[in-house]
Length: 540
Ligand code: ADP
Image 1 (spheres, rainbow, N blue to C red):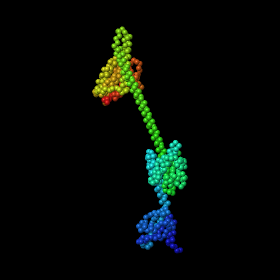
Image 2: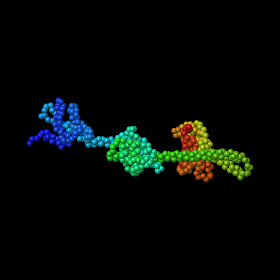
Image 3: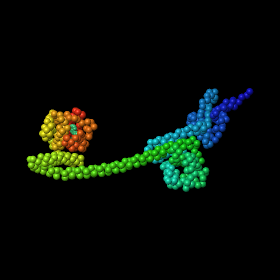
Image 4: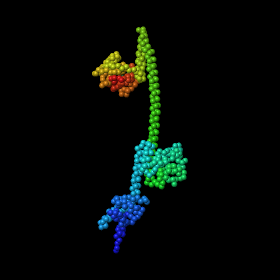
């Protein structure tokens, strides 16, 4: 059987999924000719000027893989393959040359790259929104970012506002790829969409439906919107949180006949769902801030009211103090006369009853005068009118002088006062008279309220703090009473036998504080008490 080698070779190339051919190339002239082509090759090469393409490649000895884009959109991949044929003529070279239709593969790759880009845009715009405190600040930037990565030319967000049965949309963001594209019409913000002929859209969107329109399928009353925006494709997606309608995400494309793919539509819907979250977060924050500022103004109001009440109370207190001080003054003058005259009145020796009455007048008057003096003293401390006279002296001198003054009272009770001066002789700068007043009160109490053979007076320095303690071994004061006795008019076990007003310790504590110090009590029932006066070395 006679076999045609060329047909045999051609037949052997069939069955491949790519177009295969064999070229013979003249080494010197660089001319080439096809020896054989399979059928797919012949189909694929139609419409392509392979002669020119191969001439260029062979002339440049460029045997690399290259793509050819055909006018009908097909993409061809061309490549060369080695073909050894040593028996051939010397100046000839043989090579395989393939063409392969890679349109689908190429499209898929482009699609993946595009989708990645799109998703990157979505991610970065969401990132911007997450980082912003208020959505209104970040929204234009975020939407611009998104727009850059998508097929869309314009993007907007309309916030739904319901004011007393009047529905409106506020334009929160409207971003365009370039400023040559129009913004969405102002009427969309100012007027009711039903009046604008766009009621159908609101109705659908509020029901959670997406609107995907082109001018040719829009209703006549909606045409004006397409004319003004020059939109060829309009995509409106409701923005919701749970079931609450919050606004509209809008996308516009200006290119004619360029539909939005289903997969992309899903991504736009996802973006809109995210928007729902952000808008709601913004609303919650605004509400929270509103509460916060209401609370703040409430607190402020309350503070103002309280300050006013406090001032009124202070005024009333001051008036009371002034009244008492004044009254005490007024009482002192006639009392002094009563006491003085009771001393001067000479009654006959025999008039025992008269003398007894006179003595009542005298002691009663003196007691009253003491009380008035103490009230006056207290009023001065409380109203801050007390005058301080600062001098420098040694505390042991002060103690000794006070001891001299109190001695008669101690003698009357046959009580000894044991004094321990400080180990170190240092001076104190303070009010001599006021410290003495405190000390006399403490000593007088220790004598009055105890029956032990002695009491103790200790004066010592604790670094730069002067501590003067009056210790007695009397009945002591219970924990519950320890605070109470510093309050005005508090007298424990007052059976009228011991003279006193219940003001001495209140005054002493007030004075100690005024001198920058403290007056502390340590006491145990049945053991006695220690009143410790602590003062700074120098009163500033
Ligand atoms: P007065 O001595 O004029 O009553 P004070 O304010 O000096 O007022 O004292 C208040 C009360 O505290 C006294 O009435 C007395 O009951 C109690 N008190 C004061 N010092 C002592 C003390 N050393 N021991 C026991 N009780 C005391």
